[in-house]
Image 1 (cartoon, rainbow, N blue to C red):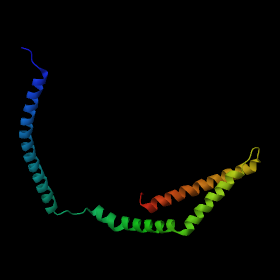
Image 2 (cartoon, rainbow, N blue to C red; image 1 turned 180 degrees about the vertical axis):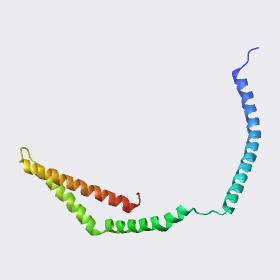
Image 3 (cartoon, helix red, strand yellow; image 1 turned 90 degrees about the horizontal axis):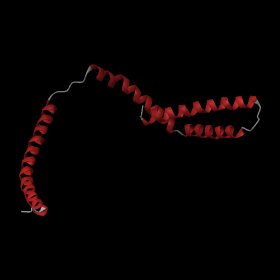
Image 4 (tube, one colour; image 1 turned 45 degrees about the horizontal axis):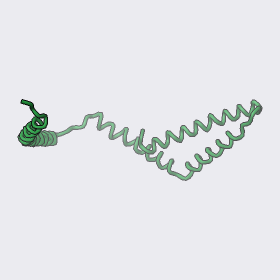
Length: 138
């Protein structure tokens, strides 16, 4: 006798449907048990008294309180109009100093422009650090 692949597929499909229903019911019951166990564990953990360590109390009381004050003052400074004006002026002057360069310029002008470039790079690095502190990333 020749077996048809189509018939085998139908039988396999029927077996899968029957088994799937049986397993599904067992899976849900096991899932409910697992969820109930997790809820009980969470309630047990909540019932226990949690004490903070001395180091945690010290950090909250001294270190973080001063850091938050420092961060707030930096944030106010960075948000101020004078800070924006200083940064904008530095950008304009830096752009002009880069535009002054020309071919075969005197060595003294080259040295002055390199010095200005270092000053502006430092200024922009300080601006970046202040903004990072103000935004709370550090």
